[in-house]
Image 1 (cartoon, rainbow over the protein chains, first blue to last red):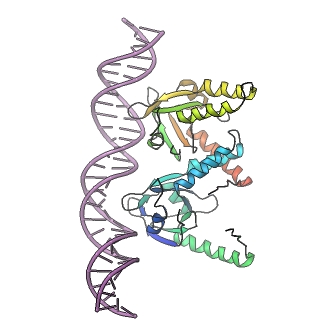
Image 2: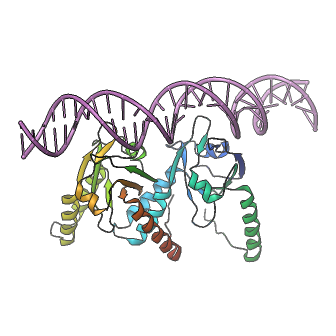
Length: 149
Length: 149
DNA sequence: CAAAAAACCATAAAATACCATAATTTGATT
DNA sequence: AATCAAATTATGGTATTTTATGGTTTTTTG
């Protein structure tokens, strides 16, 4: 799978359709499902986006745990119940459900934000604010990200 | 098999028929059995739903355990005896048996809840309550679901 | 035969496919 | 580096299909 990189701001039309950035779409080129999976972020007022194959990996991971695992129960309750599979139309647009838009405070325009193996969709102004805060945190804590080859 | 994702609320008609959401039906497209298998949840007041092929996998899994395993005995007593195969009518509806409806406290309308490789059917109000509790648990324990690539 | 179950038919609303155009990017050529 | 042509992308509107739901008729079954 290609990575989701960079940011792209697009507009919603009157029917709620919005183009998924071409760069993101081409990251999903060899997926079986021609679309994305969206759900409300647990931690921010934004929408999380994944490929279907990544979602399937999660389902596989839950199978490893037993059927009476309550922690799994809570997690999969949230994750799969909230996940919305949305397929592209011919021109690469999706319709983001109302409740997701509301959660992210998105009205007429939305910012697609690359996150590597996933992406997020933000209200543009909200993102800018949050991003500034993130940068300040980073300057303080200087985290280390280990990379194994 | 496609995943069961998102939630869909549908109504029961006077004859007890209810549409299985189109999205769920298309997850079952290349199944031999055109329908679903339902049984009472062990852990919640809701109905569990599976594809027939997944039911067969469970039968396979029980084979791995010994024939004299009493735990297996209890499990398969519940699971297989309680399981109801229900086939779709032409428009994708099923009739949920009375005792299942009663167990889930479902009257005029039911919520189909995606769970990845399975799904559940809930009384809409009950689900909302339970879901809130799950979210609170998650925020406390912050579970990690590791995904290997 | 009577009751229950299954097949059949119909329809409004919602979702999706389709077609058209404007804006942008790319790439080729000077 | 600048310009123009071609291709891609984003966006807008319309037509068609799908879906959920209701009712009726036929078939099965006890």
